[in-house]
Length: 157
Image (cartoon, rainbow, N blue to C red; front, side):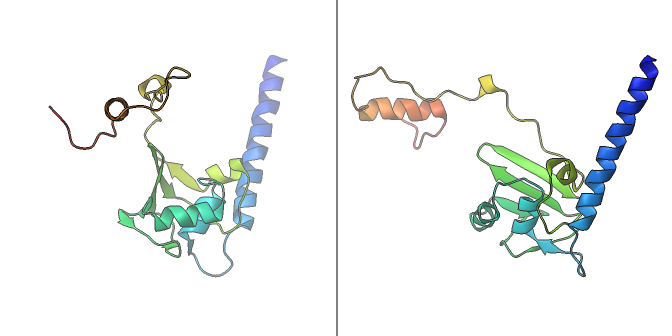
């Protein structure tokens, strides 16, 4: 009896995966086998909006096969796309080119994620917390906070 439940669960997972693949296939470009990089990173849910994807490209945060690209760069199957988001870098290899935004299960079927794991929460330094009413930080305090955050400019002895 327990194995019947497991079989049904496996069948449901298989159906969900097939549905995701079918959705991704429907979102494929009609003729050509390439799509704009800003549109693709939006379609596979690496960024929230297409304009954020275009802004990331213009800012140099998107690289395809090691080269900085403009938003209109054509992505093809097999390309390695690197997207820098804050302190994290996403590294994905294009498996399927799609033009329309799809659901998360279908989006995952369109790329292979080779990203390094995100840093643990403890490793990220907390923002400098000042006592309430302490006033504006002095130049010395500001430099100390920047040094703790790792933003420091010229090092002083």
